[in-house]
Image (cartoon, rainbow, N blue to C red; front, side, top):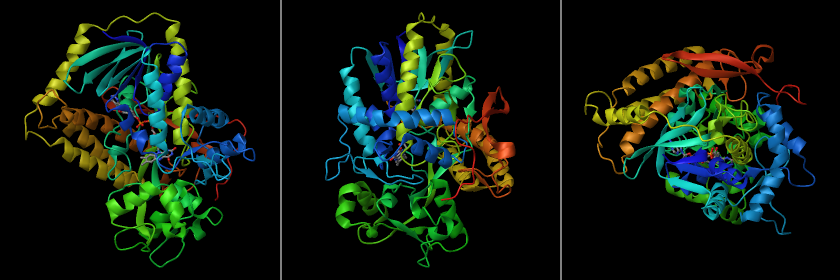
Length: 564
Ligand SMILES: Cc1cc2nc3c(=O)[nH]c(=O)nc-3n(C[C@H](O)[C@H](O)[C@H](O)COP(=O)(O)OP(=O)(O)OC[C@H]3O[C@@H](n4cnc5c(N)ncnc54)[C@H](O)[C@@H]3O)c2cc1C
């Protein structure tokens, strides 16, 4: 059995940053990813990363904007840590080799982002995630003696000892279908979001909530799962993202009558209000008949100087041309709100520790919670790096103070083999195809758990998801092979997405108020008296998930009315 001090599941920004931190602290590390690390979804991050680095800016201002953006559901101790540590992290990355944009005076350049009271988003054109990921990966290669990379390995389950501590994971080598047990003194889930539970989504096919569901299945509570972010500018045709950087550079939104409608919803911040506010405004315009025939609204990027577009927004020039047939330097492009990010995830403290000893989580799969009810643009990359590093350091500290746990009984691996073989052996044509169930799941979530919600719709969504969970037990696939059998992985991922979706719907039904991304038309007001608290969803055997609450940590900002 391969055994390491720290096993990290996921090699996006959170996982790679955690691996470097754990290795720096002296631990032996394994980092595992179902795709080559630089193909992790962090690669798609476009617009930038926030930090109050400019001397005229302050971490307190960044923290207040984040608290307000979260609709006061974010934990203020965690937000303070993230914003205080942000400037040093950016400088560290710059020193490692990230080519952040520089202004004509040679200073690091910033662009404005939504919900921020200062332009504090640092960027590399509109490929910021890719630039960060590649630099971290170069660093990982430098650490080859202490960091073992398991690339194209798919973790299927987490392991626990009799006392309930997490002691490793079981994973399948995608190249040949071999399944193995990996022992570890600490495991960090850095396995990303669950956007594929929605259709459409800006998220890649690999964002299937694997680590969230694996942790939930061994008893880790999930927090704030009802908080699902719809991004204001996704392509009408297919949900592809047009980065908030476009509005940061000066692009404006118009309805079919040519009105710049954000003037009535957020007169001060306009297009740069926080995402929940802009998405709700757009959906209202569409619902009230002021959208275009294709169901979208117009984002006019031609207002930005053409030279600047070609320099700073070149990827969305390609996206507009290739996926909408629009030259964004010459004409407006049609957009609508689309699923983008989940604020909720595996509940952790500020060191990444979950409620399961030895299990940590960081990045989009975790909920620490710095985003609360609504994440500010460019705060996610920051979250992955700050809490990736902190979890790596803490996990290394734990690991180096203890002995390697014993191996699990052989029957555990045999059970896993049996489970996967059972999926492969399902009768072709016996039930529904995995892809059919996945499509119905995505459409259901996008109908019932989107920008506007109500009890009847959420109940309907939950009923469908529970039926799909039944159907998933007999869902069949075509490929019975061992080499790169993506079909069987798709079937396993479907189960993870269904668990995540159920937790989101349960949380959304439970929260009988409107806050951040959760707007309940049947409870349209924020209700701090009853609902200024986190909702935790826990697995309850085969019964419906259990619901509990935890307090929101306040340090210095009392809830106020939120206007932009
Ligand atoms: C189009 C787009 C643009 C964005 N732009 C920005 C931006 O400009 N600024 C910003 O702050 N945020 C942005 N975001 C959000 C941000 O990119 C993500 O939230 C963040 O990158 C998530 O990083 P992560 O490390 O948590 O997960 P990921 O980068 O998604 O990595 C997850 C890792 O887990 C691995 N994994 C998953 N399941 C398994 C399994 N079962 N077994 C083994 N490995 C597994 C994957 O292979 C991968 O390596 C954007 C998001 C999108 C979709």
